[in-house]
Length: 127
Image (cartoon, rainbow, N blue to C red; front, side, top):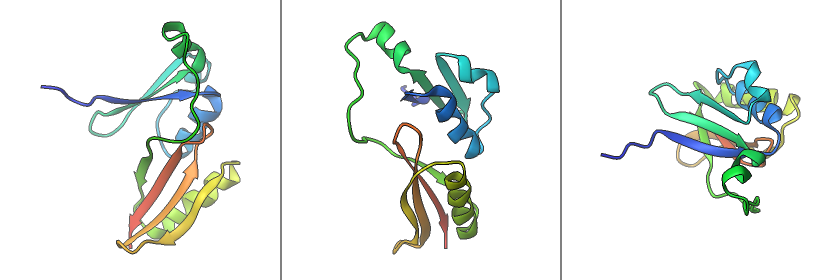
């Protein structure tokens, strides 16, 4: 049986990337900022993992960052107000809003903020 255990991402700036995900509430130790690999275990056991570009190039010398995005992470908030407050807090920390909070036709408050590597992180809550 195959079990999806982790989602890996490549970070251009590990401290900035980890600070963004800490601001979303993930428990990532401060010393991880200086490491070539970092992980956070989510409730339920799924792990988010980050590697520096140098780490990836250590086993894939031809690695290069491609433009665009092939995946999005989504973070559930407890309320529409929490979506708005989280977006405001992340903007205050210098992060870019991709889509301002809006009330989606499918019954959720929704927004997208870019992490330091340009990956969209959707924030949502039931209306």
